[in-house]
Image 1 (cartoon, rainbow, N blue to C red):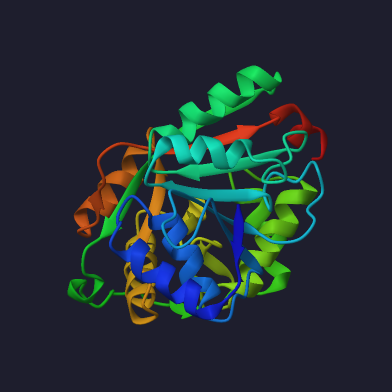
Image 2 (image 1 turned 45 degrees about the vertical axis):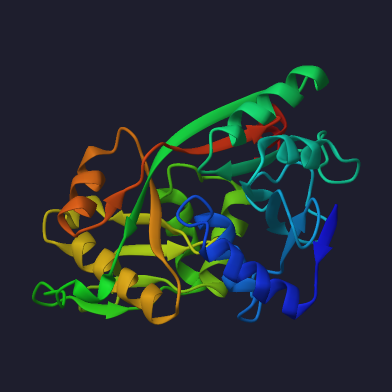
Length: 282
């Protein structure tokens, strides 16, 4: 097990992951962030170098044992056996903490299930569709409703973000959303008084997340505009424009498809380890 710290290694890894898209999307987004100033204080762990078989991208340093938001890791592997061996390597993971592993390969779920079974660790697996826009430059210029303008969110809006996020509503999620807001790009539409109407954030892996429009302002094309602006911004920064959508969220799926986002084959697996510990920390 190695933690890559040399810039030349990380640049070489970026090129290797680009050739492994779209399966490597979350890890690739993390490496792009690392190679562009590392605002999220991330690190990359590989089983070997340069011929790696498996990789994890995650926050570096100590994270509270019950913080499954900050302790989210993205996975990609070339060989599922190498991936299992990496996860079982002493010191790679703390199996007594609450943490997520996410990835677009089936082994992300099955390997955790196999190891957890031997360790008596409880899991919750949630599956999402992943949408990727092939060329955001083809998106038309968004047409904003009268009285609506592009604005920004501020730390004063973190409570609003936390209250409206389906996975939030607690102190850990509030801190996590505040970090995303302060470290990564976002898009927000505001009314004439400067109050937020619709927004989307970006996470550590370059993923579009927490896309939301306030209930009283829906059906006005706000989310269509926000997604278009965010996708074009991601492309301008050299990032892929992608996000994960709940399998039951048909309105968001339909909107992304109308905008030209393509749903990738298979599912993105979010595996929560020790969910009871994570809930206890809320």
